[in-house]
Image (cartoon, rainbow, N blue to C red; front, side, top):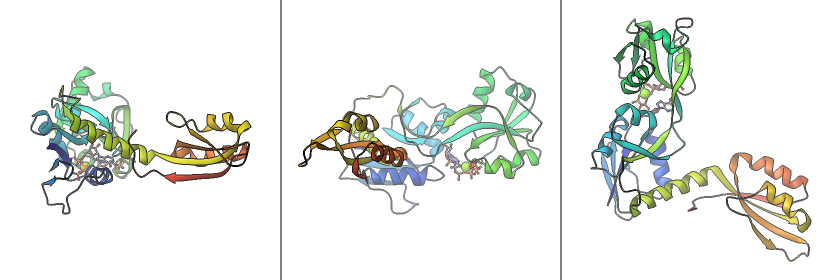
Length: 282
Ligand SMILES: Nc1ncnc2c1ncn2[C@@H]1O[C@H](COP(=O)(O)OP(=O)(O)OP(=O)(O)O)[C@@H](O)[C@H]1O
Ligand SMILES: O=P(O)(O)OC[C@H]1O[C@H](OP(=O)(O)OP(=O)(O)O)[C@H](O)[C@@H]1O
Ligand SMILES: [Mg+2]
């Protein structure tokens, strides 16, 4: 049975459960459940604190886990990223009151508050900057107002939390993060159950980002049309009963679907339809 760690709380928890559900796995019914078995898929899910997941996976007791890239790096655990999942996207940045600092060199001798001590201490050391780091569990934006630190380093998504606290980011982003699948460093990558799990999640990612497009066009326009809808490998082209016309079917990025439909129409394609993809294996 494949043993998988899933975030039990926070920003990662809801979207991770939703993705697993879309991939056909059973998920817990109540937020208090700490582990469930999905016998049909031969998988056991352990609901753990997102911060602890890389540590469990690195111990080898759990095969894989879903966590944030920033949390993996912060933990220092012996685990590696094997698949990015495209949700819980954020950047990790330094911030301070406007005018207090403009780059990492300005941190020398100062105190930085953060919930991600591992990332920050590592980044300061790599940059050769000697600063103190104070660990806080959350709501670090308030630490400056209350005099605990002069600078913070935290997750930034929309920037609303920083704005509300009267703070501004400075310097280069320390890292970009999103939800990821992790496994123990060097673990058997060919393990069929792990491969099947990854293919299912990849299927969800593709179903979320692509739509299926069907249309009819004149044979003379086919090359132009196919250039607009090259598909992932190659579009399917079938003859129509009407001489001189073909039907084309290809996957296209959902974000570009409307523009592609306009362009196809402009070159004479008709009966242009898009449909959602519910699941796929590439
Ligand atoms: N506002 C946000 N937008 C996107 N990702 C976020 C946001 N806040 C946290 N994350 C991501 O969530 C992960 C942290 O999850 P964690 O559960 O520890 O914190 P949280 O989501 O802030 O929840 P809480 O603070 O309620 O415990 C990290 O990968 C982080 O990048
Ligand atoms: O840029 P924004 O869209 O405002 O998002 C970033 C904020 O979201 C998270 O905080 P959360 O609400 O989880 O509280 P916490 O600080 O207690 O973790 C993170 O720690 C930032 O404070
Ligand atoms: Mg938080």
